[in-house]
Image 1 (cartoon, rainbow, N blue to C red):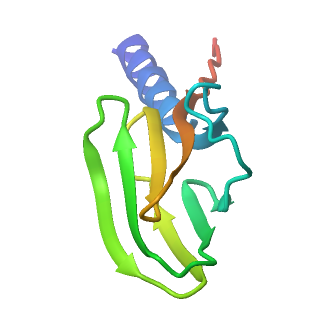
Image 2: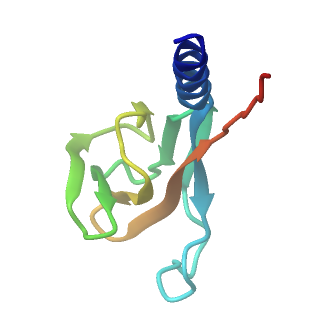
Length: 131
């Protein structure tokens, strides 16, 4: 009976340690050459906290903007159509998203500006042996 309780305690501690070690982060991905615009983009994306992004776009012509977040299958996860002044600024919390590659797209009426990023979950497991 004492051995059974010892194994149950070890299994429970192991499960708790594995769950506590999960961590998700996002990493910007380089856009492929054929997708890259031939000019310097006005789209700036900065991760301010883990999985939270600050998206800004310089819009000198003050055109109406379409802002989207899409996944690798081109499913639209977020879409907004906005008329804005010379600068667009919005914060996004992407923590609910699953692992995978996603893309911010901003279309200013003439050109599409894109920035891809990957979400990857890292799991850290700690094993301890007790006699």
